[in-house]
Amino acid sequence: MTTRVLVLGSTGSIGTQALEVTSQAGADRFEVVGLAAGGGRVDLLAEQIRTTGARFVAVSDPTAAGRIGSAFPDVTVLSGPSAATRLVDAVESDVVLNGIDGSRGLGPTLAALRSGARLALANKESLVAGGALVTGAAAPGQLIPVDSEHSAMAQCLRAGASDEVASLVLTASGGPFRGRTRAELADVTAEEALRHPTWAMGRMITLNSATLVNKSLELIEAHLLFGVPYDRIDVTVHPQSVVHSAVTFVDGATVAKASPPSMKLPIALALGWPDRVPGASTPLDFTRAHTWTFEPVDTGTFPAIEVARAAGESGGLRTAVFNAANEEAAPAFLDGRIRFTDIVDVVAETVGAADEWSSDPRDPDDVAAAESWARRHAAAIVTGLEG
Image (cartoon, rainbow, N blue to C red; front, side, top):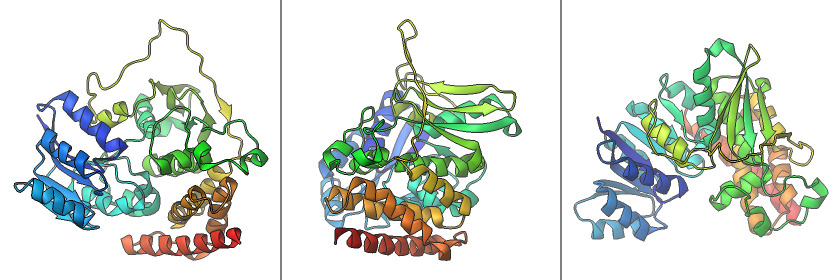
């Protein structure tokens, strides 16, 4: 039976790899029924339409949407900021892969859950920001993670019952500044921060990996996806990025998932869940010698994880505040307005002032209000640091 797939964020890193997975698996396994993109890479989107034969397309930028509509008169083109959400509402699918960047992916995430389709979620920010709003909308088994770490956890959790889980182990590469002190990080440049040792990713996620904010978001995501308390989720630095995460059970056994660094495997698994897609990635070669190392996170130098843990344990919309404050502070560093170490300081100060956001969101408007407050608060702190 062919699985009908909507790919949101099709011209981004996750989206392009997802389309490679569907193409390699063949038309008898996956049919791409729709694409959504921002509009910044019109030529690539046009090529994707020709390659997949998708008949429905959403483009956020109206000018880019007009170009696509002119080039493909037989394709239904939706445009505007809510185009991706309207695409999910309008087109029947079996799987919606949400690879949109940032918390703007919340609308499409909720739309996918409403539709009854399986949601292959690469947009961690919508889960972190939406929190209980997203988990409450998801039916059992409907929300499947695409992040390599959470995909690994989902696979490891098959080894035991939920009441047999002692803890989750979230692995982190450590980023480009592993081993440095906080003082040594004060004057690092954006170019240095965007030089990830393992993964090739977009600018924002690469910077988030350098600050360990990305791992902090993944900590929150792990709690929301699997219902394991924050004090039972451990984070360990694993520079080789081969063990993607693990689960420790009550009998002392730890089950880990290992594979070479590649997003195609978790993407394929989320699209085909619970079945695997043959040939999705290259396996490890155990005829060769390997060295895998693990070390604790230096929380003094990289405090983001503990800030996120505290935000999550406090509950309410504080995780949305955490994410929005970072979305304000991180670009300020890339623009040369603040120092690298200021990024998480701005986030921490904003979360610390977020007492009014202690309740769970009732609807997306609550999330938007918390994010707007966090961005204004973080922007004011950034302005003070500039002075």
